[in-house]
Length: 501
Image 1: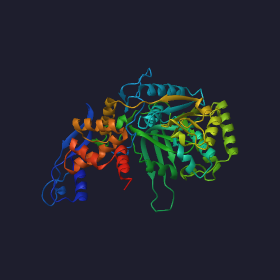
Image 2: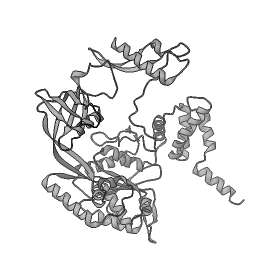
Image 3: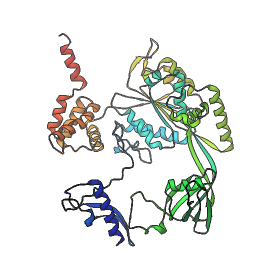
Image 4: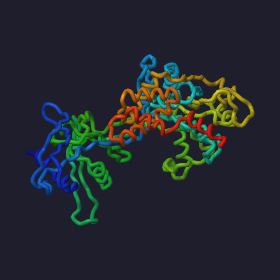
C-alpha cells in the first residue's frame, strides 16, 4: 500500500545516514488519519531488504521529538502567574506560587488597576526579607498580564553602568513600559489554493517566470496572474494546492494559515505541526483590521536613528533628544483623538530600589505625576538605611516624600510546609527524582539556612546521585553536597575562626 512504501522510503533514507552495522527493529510515532478518528498510534514496521545493514538486521529509527522552543531553567522559570481565582483570592499552591497569600492578593488588586488602564502614576513597594518571593510576585504579575501589556524590568544598579545620564536611563525605562495599540485597516485576499501554475522559461535568464494562482472560497473562485516576486514568495512559504492562505494587497506578503479540511485525507501520515482550517467563506477580497502593539521607546528609537527600525537591533540606543519625544507624544495624542491608537499602560519593575540615589528618586517623584506614566513596582529588602547620595537615613533607603506615594506590600518568611511545597515544585521543574526523606532533609536545611541555598543543592545532589549511577537522589547525596558547599553562616564561622591566624 501507499503507507507501506512510505515507511520503506523512510527507513532507506535513515539507513544511509546512520550506517549502523547491528541495530534492532524500531518503532516510529506517526499521526494517522482514518475515516473514524485521527489520533497518535505506535506502529512497528519491518524495513525493506534495501535498508538492511551489514549485519543483516533492521535499522533502529529513533523517535523524532518536535522541539519548538528550548528554555534554560532559571530561578523563576516555574512561575506561570499569581495563582489567583476569579474573585482575586490566592490559592495555596497554583501557577508555581506558594504562600504569601496577602501579598498575592494585593498584587491581584494592582493587576486589576493596570488592566483598567485609567489611573496613571501609581507606585507599589514590595518589601520583605531576602528569599521571600518579591521578584517571584513581580514575575507572576508579568505572566498574568500577558504578552500585549508592556512589562519592563531593571535593577537599581543598572542605571549607573549605562553610557548615558541617570535620568535618560530612567526615562527610557518608563517609555518601555508604555505601549501604543495602533489599529489599521488593510485589504487582503483570503482563500484556499486550488491550483498553482508556473511557466518556467526554457533558457535560464531569458524571460521572467510567470504563473497563475487559483483561489476559492465557499462562494466563489478566481484566477490571479502571478509575477516574479509573488512566485518567489509562494516558493518561500512552500504553498501547495489545498493550503489556505492570506495575501496582503499592499505589501504582497503571503501568510499560510493551514491546510483545508477537505484535503485532510490526501496523505496517510502528516507532521505534528500540520494545522487544518475551514475553507474561508464569503468573498475573496476582504478588509481586515490589523492591531500592532509597540512601546513608546521603540517609536523613539525608530524616529531618532537614520537606520530606522534596524536601530532596535543595534543594542545601545544612546540618548534620545527631548524634541523627538515631544513630537512623538503629540502624534500619539492625534492618533488617540482620531481613534487610530490607544495607550496601553504597563508596568515598570525596579528591583533593589535602595541602590538608586537621591537624584533618581527626585526624578521618579516628578515622572509619576505625568499622565503617561506606567504603574511603578519597586522592591527592596532593606530596613532603616542611608539614602544613597545623602547622609540621611530613611525606611527602605527611600526618601519620605516618595514613600508617601507608595502602596507598601510586605512579604513574610515561608513556613516549613511552604518550603517543602516550593522544593517539590523546583524538583519537578529541574526534572530531578528525589526521595521523600531527602526532600525532608533539604526542607530542614532550607528552614535553618535559606530557601535559595536549599534550592541550589537540588541540581548538585542530582549530579552526585548520577555519578553513583542512581536515578533518585537519596539522603546521602544531600549530605555530601551539604558538606561540599557551605552556606553563609558556616562560611562566616570559618572566617571568624581563621581570622586570627
